[in-house]
Image (cartoon, rainbow, N blue to C red):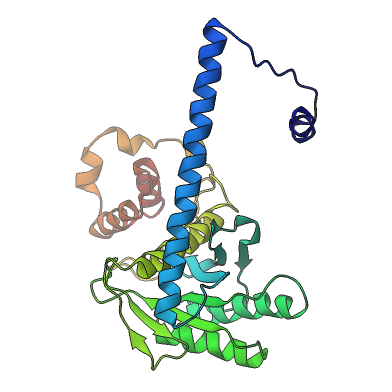
Length: 294
């Protein structure tokens, strides 16, 4: 046992098993924590496995699926689109098989094209021997995304696998999802307390979380680029060319030292400032933009 632990840690260790006093209490605490962690992990595995059994019944399978993949698309106002792929098995998420795809060359905000590109890249690699084919492909979307996924599978001649789409209902609340099986024509719902539905929700939410995380990761702490703003009452497009890339280094203009500035600005400036404020631009930058266009 000592040899195995030393191999994992990469250095020698001294293990004491006959300790007293404070060390004995620490030892007992460590044993208790380990037992609780093991019990929690085993209970979670059993819980996930029961959900897989419930999903197998919903899908009409004799045995529970061993591998599920779910895809989600995330972007910021149509820009920096990222597709996520998460993988689950009977014991829970298989994070080593998670993948992200930076989507390029598609129209801004076109989730269908983004999904087509992500699935094409993913399953082209699987056909080439990179990765494993899932038993169930879960798509976060309705009929359109389902049709797009089916087109990709047909184009690549991927062997038959179960295609499952999940779309939020009219209320867009958890428990009211509409499900599509294999084609958009097969539409059904599950009770809100269904273990199979809970598994689908868990995987979908994990795909969404992973997509959002990947979407934010490439630019940690960087401010979002400012777009040109069209302000009613003023011809043309107004831009903020005097804004530094680092908000903290932008000086506060003298005009912001008095509240009279807000009363003396022109009507278009007022609307422009309201537009900038709505986009969460710092107050002194709003005034700086307005001052640039007297």
